[in-house]
Length: 280
Image (cartoon, rainbow, N blue to C red; front, side, top):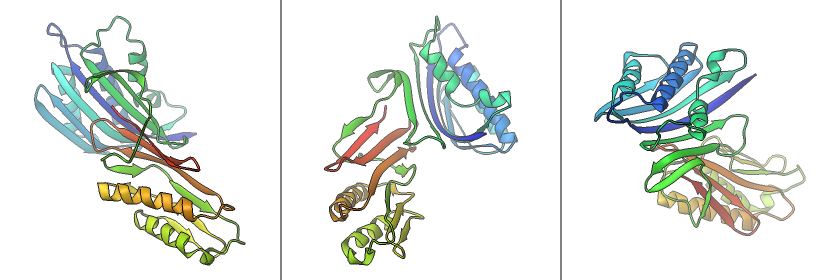
């Protein structure tokens, strides 16, 4: 059994004046050491890792442990103040203890019950998405950030339109799959909308040989113009689709461009588009 995880984490720590030790930092270092072990076995890849430690910047990306990777772990332990973020992917498999040490779950457990540890000068956020789960994954945050206090799961809140960001679709956001009796050519407006949506994506499937099959895959929304056009096309698609075909609109999106992940879902309730965002 194996599970592929996509992860983003962000840890900010200001150590006490009389101490060089921080338990959250040591837990993070343990996670990164386990991640290094998975890189050695070819089962992990770091897309982006950034650290600012006492004003000094460090960076790493790749799937091999390098001196730069080791420097980040060392600097995190030694610095008084750190701002660390990472975006990575790894494979979990049953049967090896090392798999249980990697990922955000140890830090999440710690922040759920920090005991006597002082976490007043700590902020932590984490997003994880397993390939066996549906939706955009789970987002948690702990501590104070941007004037707001967090203590666990970050809730989705409804918004009026797609907010600015670099939104990447997490799986097929629109699906139409009719039986072969459906004459797609008799609905040119519907087909044109599907084609326009497909132009906003990569590797979408549009087939009219036996009915209508449409899978909207790998949509990326980077500008206000793209956001407005995507929303408008979804509304037009609902209006143009015959009532006797199944139309599925349930879009999970991720914005990985910042230190903290941002999540978005776009659904249709039969009347309106429902857009919700989870962010810190």
